Image 1 (cartoon, rainbow, N blue to C red):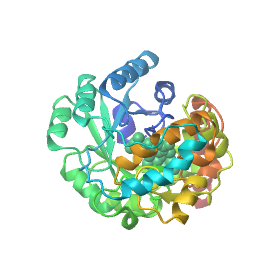
Image 2: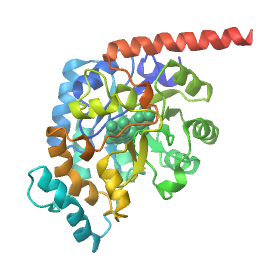
Image 3: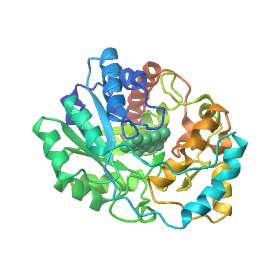
Image 4: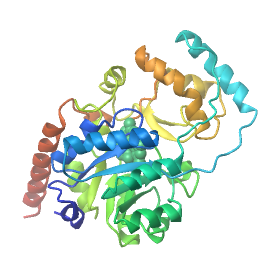
Length: 357
Ligand SMILES: Cc1cc2nc3c(=O)[nH]c(=O)nc-3n(C[C@H](O)[C@H](O)[C@H](O)COP(=O)(O)O)c2cc1C
């Protein structure tokens, strides 16, 4: 029982990772909170109206605390000549899926200030974020209403910057983690530190609770993270195959073939480095030595293809975000997974204790 768990009445130190792009349904979020963990709703790809609807839906399913997650607003980098090349690269996939020719949308991402308004209006106990620091006005606004802020760090320096900016807890995201790297202070290639090395160094560097994230899939990983000094863990991949997750059928099928060596880091889908299962799109992108558009443009440009590929079950063209723990994935319900995690933690701890006596 850590201070972080006590503060939010958690009976198990598990935070559900917010999982944007579909997996993070209100049912999944509420099920984790109802099972004694902390659910997190991914809101970064949602507009204000959708955020309000999703928060209301979670509140209908649980009276326990849950978090909402946003992306820190990013400086919009200018587009360049690469647009034409990326468009040409996408064209055959659009044809294969029966889509019209690739076209850059006017608005590649939802408006952060509108998202923040929706989140602030909901007066949530916890807001988490990734991809950087929050604007100081947003921090002040959320803290003034008593919201606990949790930022994402991939290096010790980022953790220190987040603490200085006023966060109440830091997620230490190791390089094993599924989906986007939260890196903001250095190029993502320079911040690929594994969870076991990152967590204790962040714990030693900051005074706020640290939440370990990346590659933690079972009770052994949970006990290990607590031994490293973490106050809780944030798990994403482990929940992807739960019944309550919004993971599409094609994505689920691919996940069940996942193994520890099946993932790769790529910017092909979004322009930001992310970890997922390698597939046709990533392999062809790499072979063609393509230059990606800056995030969020690349993300917006590949979105129609990813959507249509999901419907057509074309796993070769989907972003199959997964962490390196993929081989430990279980198809189950949240209630069962949480129960198993609790029992595994106990067993792992008893085994260690026995070995030390
Ligand atoms: C499918 C998927 C989507 C994700 N989307 C988000 C997101 O919207 N916001 C965020 O802060 N982290 C997101 N993450 C990253 C998680 O917060 C976390 O770092 C990661 O899941 C931990 O590694 P694991 O997948 O090995 O448990 C996502 C992870 C996955 C697997």
